[in-house]
Length: 164
Length: 164
DNA sequence: CCAGATATGTCAACATGGCTGACGTAAAAT
DNA sequence: ATTTTACGTCAGCCATGTTGACATATCTGG
Image 1 (cartoon, chains in turn brown, cyan, yellow, red):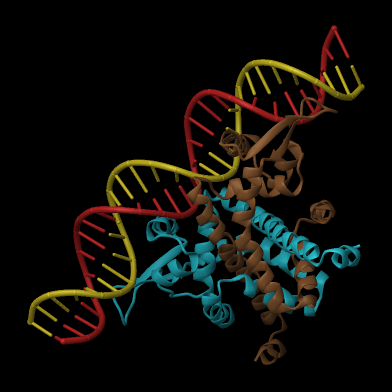
Image 2 (cartoon, protein in one colour):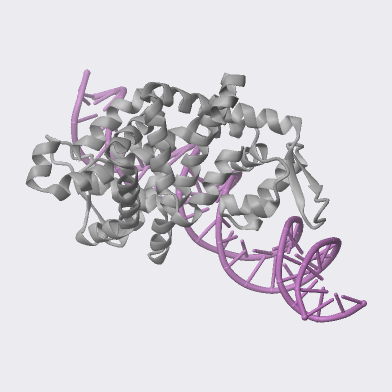
């Protein structure tokens, strides 16, 4: 069927293929965020809090500016979220030693526990998808997702996800 | 390096691998939605409007209930968005003939133009990522994303994205 | 045929998490 | 010494999600 269509109109399959790729991303992201959102709601937090603690967890001592660059939101938006996390003891800020203007970000033990708990459904979901799809598929998945990222940012993202 | 680490602690690579998969999804989705959001802003619309017209475009005459099931939002939320789209002439609602309680959804020509314009950056982005990654990678990407979707919904999504 | 279920809409109120703009302070850099 | 940088804060706006309650038209099953 796909072959028939593409032999009639080679652009048709391509359009279909692209639409499918777009929709799959929508559906996957929808379900990917569902469980964490539920757990976060128990704490009175939202997805924004998850993002913050996730990236702080993976790079303890990161600067506020670095987190802003990753999240691509305004400092006012981040500030609200970060403020709550600090107030409630999930995140700790320490002055930088080299540059004392910086407020380096760390998770407290409580913060690490929250991060672990909230991310667990996502890890399980990705693990299961990887298992079902097989090892080569994992590599391909990474390649395509990386290709979806703005070209200018790819190098930075690669560096970032690999140093962990 | 990966081999060394995994031979020391087989769980380490796995955890790292999962974290990378999670972060790539975040980054890809972030950039994937960036351009459409900018265009939508010109019209005073947001991402929710895009989702609505996208799915109406791909399945003209769909019911409100079907759209709600895809988007997983409340009818009140959808109603606001749909109302604006109808008021401004992007979407048309027609009574169902078989079931006259239904308000079947259609894009107007204006709506199709908007959909095309807003989706174009996403199509270009996916096309380029597919091109760079190669044909087998595309299949693998789809397989993994499908695996990320709630198991209960996979069959429906597959049916949905394939009938187009 | 009628009672109940269904498809959709609507009003009201609220929360989250984006945004802009303006302003402030401490510390580093030139 | 001045300027730039890193960060914070106040105030207000907007988009998009939520819950709960209620209304209407239409379909369906007993």
